[in-house]
Image 1 (cartoon, rainbow, N blue to C red):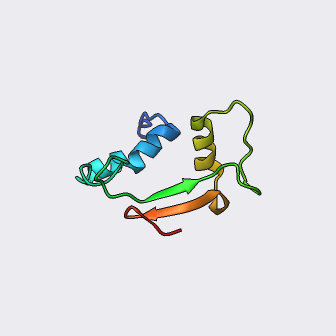
Image 2 (cartoon, rainbow, N blue to C red):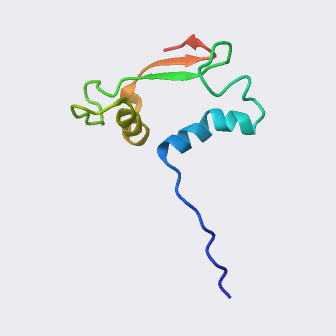
Length: 92
């Protein structure tokens, strides 16, 4: 017999982002050290500009930060990265 399908719901982009940051840190038992931008935590981060010249992202008037964030997650590439921090230190 064919097993019944397992019920699921797709993750939103915000849920996926949480799981890849604070949620992942908590699962690994590292939530007190990494996972967000609170003072005193270790941090790797990208500085992103969705409006750079030759960007793969189209930005429309009236779009808020969440729409721009979602577009970067799905469409952004190296052209949108204007800075890189590793361990809290700027490396690019």
